[in-house]
Image (cartoon, rainbow, N blue to C red; front, side, top):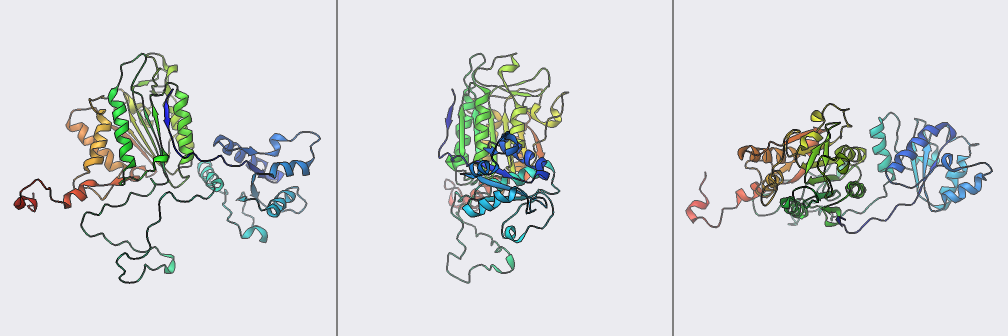
Length: 437
């Protein structure tokens, strides 16, 4: 079995009871299905009631210990509807009510003081995001907020007038380490390495690549909390990866954090669909059913409500995971708001390397040394292009990538070269420390 490294698990949420008018049954069933698929406990009377049920007793039992999702519409506000019993009971008990508008009718005064997200006019994906954000309880941040005043005591505190954020001032040159980019402190990562096989050659550099990458994620320049990093070391069953990814997605801050999926190991291509297959320790050559079809990973990530998704695949034929290289089979669902990096083309093997695998080693090199004359913050595109240039210069397989919905602008880390460039190397003679190249 794989060793799942995890800390500080979140407790499970209470059940979600859906309160709706009969005219909105379609909305109720769609919402119930989406929440159930996302792992929530859902109570929908249409799926549970039977002949002879007492409506009042059923409502009382369902509301006990549940949070209530109220689907607000013109039909919901009608005074003779059974739903009046439901939402009045919720208000009386003080339980949390989650209102969602499913038409444009103005809510009555009792509901106007509540924040009421609307699903009206949205496409299915955006409606799913709004729904999942609405049911996530408020959370304390993982990192302390920045100090709003001036550290030197000079001048006035930043203005809050007109709803404008204070203007950031350029930091003076020096040794101060910039803070991590936004998105990581409330994000989550799943790092998977398969290095010891039953029926295939071992890949020792895969384990070392994962360990080094984990250290980078924990560094102050990235700022991912240790409890938010899951490590799968040599999984034997594809379901272990899928289950760990489910838990990682749940950990990420929905709609605000960054989700990072990393895989290193042997890869193969499906002889039927032409799509990428990821190996586990028990995967056998020429036996596709012993592998994990990347399409399942793609579906899980695309289905999530996380707004920024970074996927790195370091294995042979990893380019087969990209939509444009997916083969002659049906086109898979596109992962929106994402950046997918592949270590090689769909028909090309990847290089294992001695200490690190070639592609991950190139990424680690850019993360450690930065990009000369590059931006202060390295985004996904800058990181990929830096690693690609390293691979090209060394004659290694040429990495591939796929970008969706501004995924290329996902911030990764501060550029260490900009900081190192300001600091003269201590091993040079004094007259060379300040010389310009």
